Length: 256
Length: 235
Image (cartoon, rainbow over all chains, first blue to last red; front, side, top):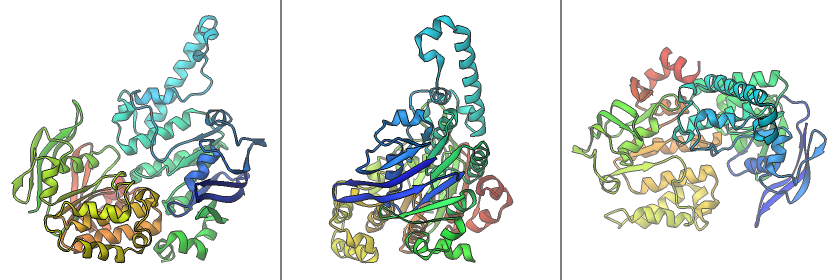
């Protein structure tokens, strides 16, 4: 699926990502954890083409993707969300989702003239899909509100909705539950587990450790730009380096 | 009573986000507001801070009606607001960030000593005291933001999701720091999605839903309430 080889990235004197290598393999849901400033988001930017790597290679489905621009990587099936939400603020919530649907016939000139009914049918289907996603995320009553009027948490949910519209093969989520109310988090867990059952792969950064432990099949741990550990949730929770760098008292609480 | 909100209605356009919100904070209390996304929690803080003027209702702070008072005058009266993100000066050093906070104090006599005390208490800040704040990690930024408010010894600190996006080890530090702010004599009104953690350090809590008061009780009562557990803590 996704293979990362000796990837490094520096900003001036700061080495944000330092010679990181790993392979997601067939893992359904993988997690990336580590202290604030350890390079997790930078790594996600490198995978999705938002930053250029200094050295190394990234392969997706046996194709080299480093050097490709973000929109091409997205069309290859890697779709992401951002920590700071990036919705289209002046479009309605519904339109925000509809624009995320890939391969829209209506975006080309010829089908508009020669297959108008097909274009209309696809539009209707996209619209129905968008409404059902909004309903799942508890945003249906806000479908006509400009996305910029939604609260931070609601915008985060809308971003996840945009990802669901895009028929992804690999979903990359940067802190999907930060700012989301706990009941909705349970809901998100169900959504993500359903995606896994449809063999869509998920790779997420998350600080909510109970959630990471419950959801992830494999966890990668970064500290100061380097990958310091990877393993199953229980291996990670019992690793002294991870406890020291990241978990702190959380680990004690989990033992109790 | 330090702060009272009576029947506050406020919003950003035609539709009100808050309708008839009532709550109060007493001296020395830590109060936590929880509720689903879009419940109006952040809007409550913005209204108290003065970023938003209520269309109805009264806000009383230290016995004075502040409903239409300017943000600056509310600040001078002892009200500090720490918003989500963007709560430090990224292009100033850590020491400068603390000093600039101190310029708001009327009595600057102990400022340098107090800055030193803060730095000694938080080694992460001491180590990087001459670095630009933009170089701090998310957790360190939040510690700096809280420290800036400690220097002012305010009567009330409004805190919007202090644990957002922080590593577990840092979340513990932040909550310890909030408890300390409470012990040092300031009251705290806190909005948290991390409801369990928020309520566990709070004297009382308020549950908001769709811009209205839904429930209130002591932190412990809310944590143990079946309704809260089902609706907001996720079982």
